[in-house]
Image (cartoon, rainbow, N blue to C red; front, side, top):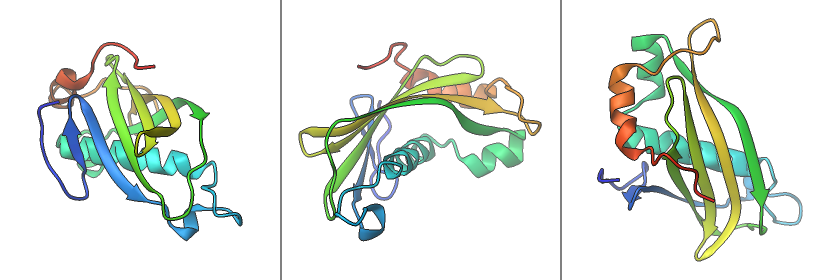
Length: 152
């Protein structure tokens, strides 16, 4: 990915968006280990910031086109436990851009160790909750970043 940037949106390196985050007390269970559902929240933040960095904003998409993005399916492989105060990175890549759907491959990393891996299908929906094609400006923006293959 050739777009650049730093700050809350993260950064893009070699077709991968990198979003840093720290594990807070609220993210953990009584033992200080990240509660399993919070990995989904971390991934959502990473995807949202990746799209924001590419100038695809959820609010603007809803207002301008009457469309929203939703997770159609998600597979999560929990590989290691993340813990209180860990510094993590959500690494996101796009693949398989279709008329109304997009594949997203995400890893949540602690340094050189992947703690969770997610594969998602994101769909574009109209106000009635029916699938809708990505608007051409969004499709044109995403196309260079959609690698055409899933990353395992």
